[in-house]
Amino acid sequence: MEYSIARLNDMINWVQKNRRDRFTDFLSMKDQKILLKLIDKHDDIDCRFDGGFKEAERKIACIYPSFLAISDGEHFDAIKGIRINGDLIRLSHRDVLGSLLGLGIKREKIGDIIKRQEICDVIVHRDIADFVLMNLKKIGREKVIVSSIDLDEVIEPVIEYEDIKTTVASVRLDSIIAAGFKISRTKASDLIKAGLTEVNWETNISPSFEVKEGDIISLRGYGRIKFQEILGTSRKGRVYVHILKYK
Image (cartoon, rainbow, N blue to C red; front, side, top):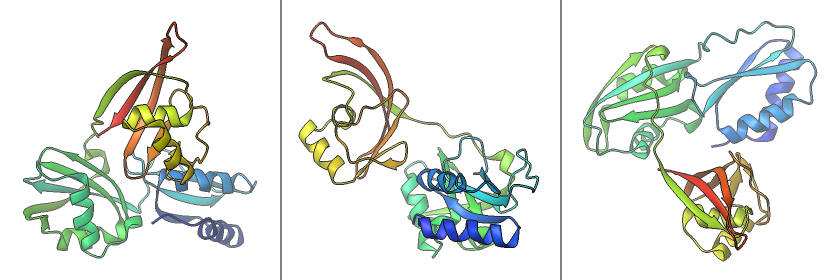
């Protein structure tokens, strides 16, 4: 579930009125960008994000009056770390998330899930930490042991991706999506126009949009790619590109 603009505006207005800080639940990258744009409209309001570890994508925001001193070096008290041990090798990130949601937990109470072999660390809101510790007994059919950990113990995520080096007619969004997800350019264009594409976590419906090096592109139902770099141009004018497709 994503936060609505109205919901975020309500929180900003509450902070302005009460002159106190307020925490969101976990926000997606898209919602974080929306919140920053809303905050920019107010000279007296600021915010800081924390996801429990440096590379986190999903983060809680602290919205606060600018006169308050909010330290950048400390984690929010609202964030807790949980470690899941067991025979997890055959289980996916989706299996872990599904088991947590199956307990009746709302998605916005769950931060990043970092899985490596038989260890999985989950960042959660303190509201549900004890509930998870008491009630998460299985993931799929596998029995698991759940314990609380300090945030500085959270394992580092390992990003796995497929290297794609190919040529495209141009760096238009439809061309890069077609190359990255191995679909036709026509289909890529249709999916973009249908509103299924995000560039840097913002919806983009323009097939002719020019992608820049470093852009992150998500296609609903297909996954995520990063337009890593332009490698050169062929004699026929095609562009050599390097794309990372996240697994």
